[in-house]
Image 1: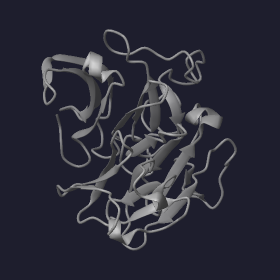
Image 2 (image 1 turned 90 degrees about the vertical axis):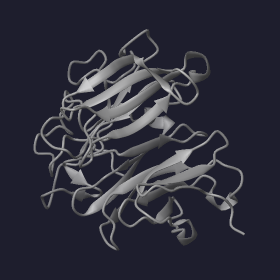
Image 3 (image 1 turned 45 degrees about the vertical axis):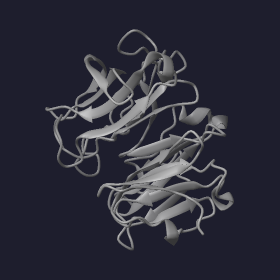
Image 4 (image 1 turned 135 degrees about the vertical axis):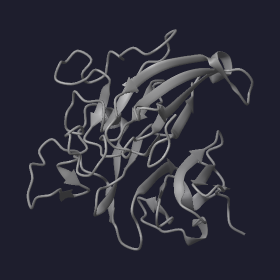
Length: 294
């Protein structure tokens, strides 16, 4: 595994039938800097059997150390979703995000229920269409570092890290097939704004539900979850998100900032448990559970 920059061990996900098949999926960058998703079988509740490693997919990413994406989630449909960055540098110089044949700058959707590797779900947008790679579910993403599914509605919420000026949240509901075939706009747009030009062709683009600027120390969105717990009524149905540099915690759609939830350290991820309680993960080490105030 290669670390440094934005590389390293970036995400893991447990199979929906983990209790019976003991499968866990790991997203990391290998020694060449390429993205790998590998399946392991658990040896014990705390350890994986290294000998069981099965490479699900490998994606070349050799040039830059940033924009690796890194989120794995199983969707409500049981498929494995993986968010990949656009390949790095700035401005997507290789044009990956808008290239439907490239696996970078995408949300991928894979069927991993077979004995090894993956197969293409037959309802993927390009499964029977040569205009794009069969693994691609959505495109036009810069660095979808963290995304999640609303456990009640199934809606897909993506925190996509911006370039120089704006961060954004993209939402796709079950009504529009959870983002199937959608183009979220990068590098034509950054947030609601044309990128690198005064005007741009926005036809066919799915714009974000919110953006925020790089003010107050903000630099990179950390996407979270819609709160579906039972302990904090004011948060129910609200999407929580943060920023790696500013470390605020805000909610959508009510637009509220929660100063009592602001952790110490850079917020790198969120977590959700079986009861719907949410957790905040910081790069500095502490993991915080969100609980009702006194």
